[in-house]
Image (cartoon, rainbow, N blue to C red):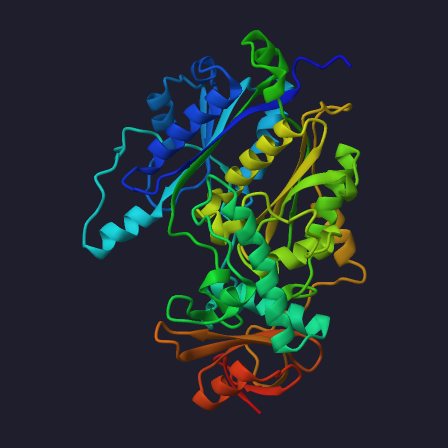
Length: 498
């Protein structure tokens, strides 16, 4: 087939795992960019970059990190951009870059991110700050091209439900209850799922932890694997204590041909979609499901003119097991198929969870796999917040017959919400009884339960969130299947088992 010269193509992906530390974030991105150019077969791509788009960084603050990366690699871009926080942003950046290249607004785009969080925390523990690059006020701030994802609804803020390691266990408990499993049976499911992810990481040269863990080892609390929030010990939490960078180089087919990039390096984005759930967790129609994932993934497949059975290389965003299970169910894939693992990297626990930038690594890994198996298809799902925002991409070494296609499915999600899957009324302040829907017990570093977060349904069907601190209640919530129990909630959000 004749390929439109403006067709966007991903020609290289670079990944850096800096185990020795000491490398600042923009240098991690620059190194990854050089690796991406090497994979494309020509360093000249770096000179021709006209747009550098950087995933939001947490380990250091720059005014315009894209400009610093460009300096380091010898690029002279017309445009730099930066994102807010959110793990879906790398795939959103790919979707936007593909549109811009197809429309002629850009020709060579570098997408990258990097975190030196491990180094930063080591220095902080010694009371030191790193001697990394600082840009003064004379450097204009890069425009924000993807905004922050909200992560603090009033219903969450007032009880201290303020981090993913507290919220995703609430989803996990809801999944267990919905599946009708006992605590012990569900623990086995968790261990086996995350063990399969560690097996993939063991064979990934870029993974931070290249070790195959047994299922029982993953879910058994120990001094080295302490409970964070039930039922999650440390080994099922995202590992952000890493120094990692990744970069993607995209250009038009015309430029790839002109520079002599071999077609064996070409990976085509076929489709990209984005979707959004309610900002408030308490408003979700279900705490063990996600219409935005279901609709966004289905639309991405439809636009790429493939079915989920055609996807051989799948990477589902894997910050926590509940995120994987919800997405797998909505997409329509089993979690225990040894012939098609749900990760190509090993996931955020084992491959590494460099804050917002994990999916840049996932896209680079999927692209490498596609180059090794021409004609197959890959799919990446990316997630921000608490299963709040989602982005999807379908890729292949074969060009898309209809060109790259992108769609925001927000309106389609709203149509579903207007029907059977209506958002739940959020009751910020409830005084009285509620029926326990899901819960998690948060532990301190010594292994002692400190508090429990609960979600309950109030008379009339609304949902409220509350926090439990009574020692006896915590012991009961930590050891029993308490779904359906009555809890008595005070106006300030504190609660007791009734």
